[in-house]
Length: 638
Image 1 (cartoon, rainbow, N blue to C red):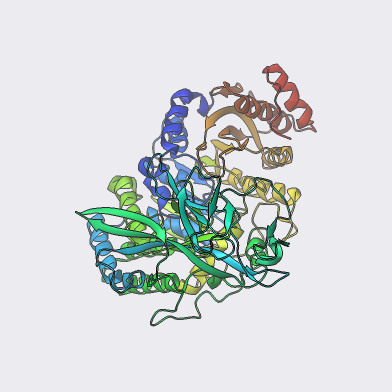
Image 2: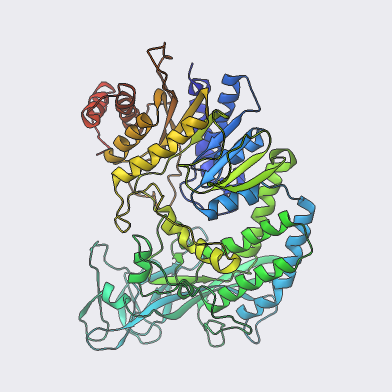
């Protein structure tokens, strides 16, 4: 009987859909450190519970060779299972090791309050002279400026005149619109079709064209000639502040007002006292993702931040080192502070229809907006600030609880000695082509392999690694062993298949003879499925079961309005045995109530044929055949 047959899939779907809408409440550990494509905690937890029931054992070793955000490790630790987690990169692996390590909750609470108090004097950088003591700028919104390529007059690059609605209130009737001629922001009714700039009286359409172009152009408001946006952005970035979000405390309650910049507002990017310029001076390397930064005129990592943001993060790290607290508490504080580096003031995007700042890499790419927002990293309100991150770290510690954290946590590197895991957790940094468990130690390998070329994990993590190099002296990791096609590195689908196969073969070595490998996966590219099938077969596994399960939040910005997969295919495998022993019955579980789910099961059946028959199978033809059997005429995988 397959492990996945023990899961109540309909109930799990409902649980996932509820939890994915508010992950920070149901799974607070997702806020502890940034990683991408985290799978739902409810799915990992249900699969672990099913494995405990199937094995009749509640103390076996669970391995996740592509641990990333640590979902499997957290859920396994909460159930008292022994945990082996490995990731190629130091940011997620050291972050996971920090979060699994036991720390005293009361000590952390006191240390958090002490750190916030020590940093409080820096908040004066966001207060202007004469501003009420409770008033503070929490966000500064800026627009990119550049001289016209023809007349050299200054242009303010509002790709769309709408900068932001005036508040988050339901039915908000007012909004701010930007003038490309003078850079002023004008408050006007949201229903207007045109508006007159309150500063220079130039008249504009209230909304820009919705036409997509690979080579967008911007019309100069002065000479009316078109300029290629790419050429405007190639120069060193210059910025003009247009709006601020001001926080006041009235009657013990926070009030926020979005308004145009006024004389005396602290919006200039001047270096604070004790500013150390050398931090983050390393150049931004070429890449598929980081290339967008270079084409945007950024050259060094420090170019992405305002000087006071760098000063705040560096000072916070220094103050953590001065605290007289235990090392586990210090490492959690450092992780929270360092997480704020994903809020660079010249890269973060402002959500204009629901006013808030988005992290620079929130949507699996570096932001490419010409209207950006600087977050006051010491504000007690606002997304991604240090106080909010410290609160999240405390909630995560409470959520895991004393019984949910391993008794011991060791961090190691992939080149270390091989060992058994008798208690606690081991978190490893380095390629899972070499894992440091001894043969046959793990009973369950539960993981989600890299999603082909959908995500360039290493390039996105460069932002965090740049800080880790400068702040902690950690060597810059090599990306050469990452299982992802990347034309800049000269890797393709063959390299992806080879690396995934090598990692899964090593997982086959550490897996007990009666153990199970369970993968979660989705992709719209048949090349990715074909490569995954070849990797599973090469590694010595046989597929014995498939299921579909909800996995994504349809309201996420990167999914909204797109034909993206919101479900995963769960693939259960067993080690292939010599000879022709009796194989378990093939299981298909989960709902088939949508075109997406039927497509996943169809491609899963084709995948299983390719793996189990150990011969060339035309997956495209078999996939289409299974779709017809399921009565589905929409092909979502090509």
